[in-house]
Image (cartoon, rainbow, N blue to C red; front, side, top):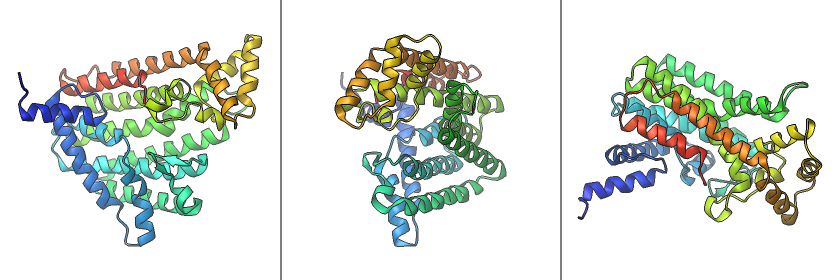
Length: 346
């Protein structure tokens, strides 16, 4: 039996979202509204100055997964998903995310972002930082249109993102557990904006207060799960599938959960093999041969499975936060996203 055209279009929309939305009608609605967000986002980053305009549009034009605005729109469906404020809220969270990437890439010396050359590698660090600041200012302008409560939420989120980056840069204090420190960094730097994306969506969609709090807690925990899964991908991914070179974070000696768990083992009851692997991990990984050797050894080590299990634990805890939500396509989509996050390959 041949599907009706609107059914086929809806199914295609579900696949195009890159977010598991089993209900085809909901997927089609979200895809349409995300298109509205993209158009509004282009207008929101436009600058009168030609150089600023080129730089500000660079990462927006590169695309990206748009998880945050999509989460805003999805949670808005808990109430009246057609409200104009939802588009504005989605723009706020995506502008905040993009602005943070301009700064992050300078700090991390990242050469590529969203499949395009990073801003600092094209225009230099100073331009990247200044335009990132301009985009944060634009996000502030947009959120001001949503009222004082939204301004407070966005400013608290921005503060947490800055603290997360600060603590990632400085590392754990003397005597502080490195794993606990790292989880807090993930919560502040990444998960806080996902929590706000969900909160603003439910809030401006008109959902009841208990549902607003539920999806905010969900966003916080699913954000940590997402980043832990990313740590697994850095080691276990097939580069041709994920588009990410295995061991990129290891090469840059960026702390990730598998490395932290290995370091904890060596500091307590680790084996000689653990110590040898940690020494290799801390060594010179600039050559492809050295990097691939460490990646292969970590793939076979228990710390990778432990990190995957942690991602699954946080994802399950995120799903558990959805208990106050009514049964239906929105709750189902959020549940399936939590499951997909912990086992993702890209």
